Image 1 (spheres, one colour):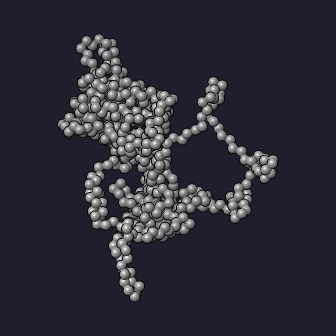
Image 2: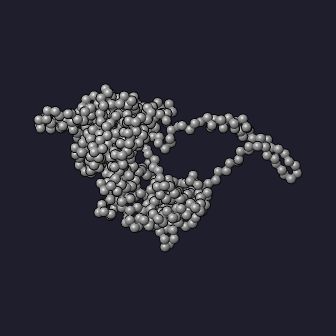
Image 3: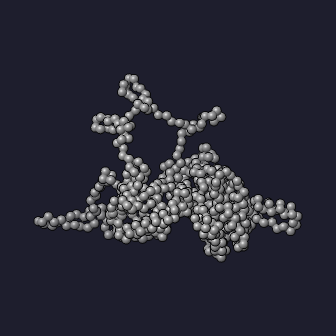
Length: 551
């Protein structure tokens, strides 16, 4: 590695987060209600999916001062007999100490509106120092990452001391602290104070996004950023899925030319947490677990008057074949099953128009060139999974050349794919080229086999009178009743023109069903008899307001 630096490590699974909220600005007070609900939802998500993660709550501009940095300053001044000591880090309160995600923490965060300040101004950099101190002081076993999530509208005046700012950046970089600034954009206009604070935080994030050498970038998942508060809350309110490859191997173009690639699933559907059978009458004090196990038995009714239980080793599988069943022994079934070598092989090309994306049978997969060790770590994977810089460069150049040539000619590559060794499942699909500023890659879309496809023919709608000619005479056919007339077309055009397109972004909306399920679980964790959050026959929550409404 250049300059003797080792590649950055992949992000750890455990995260300690300080939720730092600005409660000093009067313009921030009206937003504390929904901000508290959103942050509470972030904590609830970790209770479900990452209960080892820990949270602390720090308020900036609080009615009282409660933090260790302030207390130590007073104690040190008293020990040194400093009579003219000026207190620092005022109006900053650590309201929830660092602890694992739990219902109590989520409840305190949900009551954030009760922490509204009385006009006392606190310094952003002082509060950031206190938040970083909370993270550094916290000790826990194993490797974990540190994060500070600041929620503010940037309207609080903050004197910028560049030397102090640089020391904070050096300390946070040394402790590997990630900074996320969630900006609450209210109805206030852009002011000089807001622009200055935004520039200060952006410069701080830029300095944290490189390692101490000033060149090597930090992993993508650990980058600091300044973003809209709602986008940040939506991102942290869902289960964070680590990037996992579904294929690592060679893409064979010819018997003598391969490209080393990684394959990822393009999308992954999130589902509510799975439920388990539960026995509330179990007595844990006597070692009885509260979960219920399930056993399955098979009974033969060959003799209806004397049914017998069949042990597993005596059972066979059978295929129905007409009126009879054909038993197949397990060893015979293993011989019949096909075993294929892992790999992807291109066997032809076809116009892009002949393989539309809507013809796909399964989830699409993204193929990228095999990365280097540093690229693997930056993608959130283990650095050891990457290859050498030379091999990674060759794979990237080959992938880029292939994708651009396919895009120029307007063709897709027909590909046979086996994603696991000795698998009996063979996928047939099309590789389509994608060239974007981030890089050039291919998307594999599985296509149907002959047994999977069928045609559903529909008669076309008649939009005008057609003439029938049978060689003897011509006759006008009656106009189809379901075809729209000119008045209906004009009304439909006017309706479309009236829609301003200002609805929610479909790519950033949470699933209302999952959000309300998580909220119900949180409510039941504190009240066993909490009522459901939606009427069964009410059609469910409003899809646009549900992600932003209180739990």
